[in-house]
Length: 125
Image 1 (cartoon, rainbow, N blue to C red):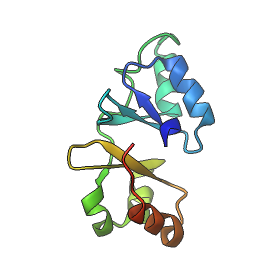
Image 2: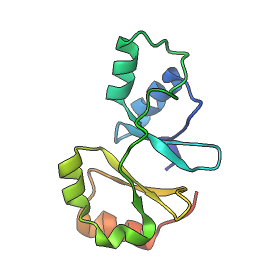
Image 3: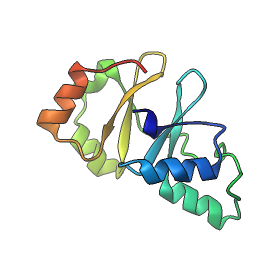
């Protein structure tokens, strides 16, 4: 889980390094209290660089602050597969009532195996 979390004050270079090791090619941006702030993917970084951002620039103004997420207590009410298809996203952050990131659902999930396992095994960071 930690390999897809990145702090809001990280640099573009740090983001690229984490994206390279992430299977989902998307990272969840958090603050120091693990509260969800948004997501950043390789396309966001590419666009930033094309707009003359340097590798030592912070990601603060480049990540998606309006990302889709789901609260743990609402997870069973949502058609996850449909959300991935409709929104064309790589992952869905799962948060608690205080918007702290507790897990995520990758776009490559197998609904019967992974999702049910994740719902049963949601753990705090």
